[in-house]
Image 1 (tube, rainbow, N blue to C red):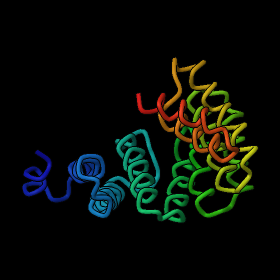
Image 2: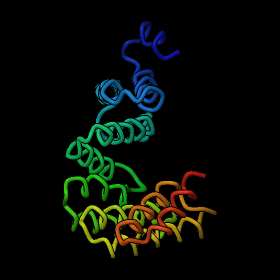
Image 3: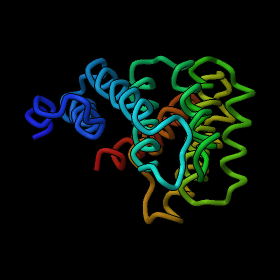
Length: 197
């Protein structure tokens, strides 16, 4: 396993990334995940450099950056998360577009968050569009526009159903919250039941 391998190879960025992923998703220990993923990035860049090149295993670098954005996000380190996302976008494609909306929203930079979501929509990539619609739902809810939130949360559910066979539990739950906020309690209950299934 990765821990044993790390004893023998303490400078393995792959082992640190694997341990970080295990801590993040298996143990929900976000600080420990951040420690290992930060170590993975430091080790990778010390060995391979900071810019992707054909001669280096750049996919590992991209994976490490993505893992770090998730760890910082779960720890509510939104400035650090954004910094890593912007760095990822400078180096790799496809770029993160709609994903930028969440940390911007959490920083209460609603206009910038909406712009990030709109850029995700403009890609016309189904996964970017789905993330953008989910983000717009959350943005309007957090911004306090209950009517707009109800509208865009409904659009997120419709998009998920039409393009992926069903809406996600997150989208259904968000839509239920938005419905509750505009006093559509029967609809909120139905949506929560659907999300729980």
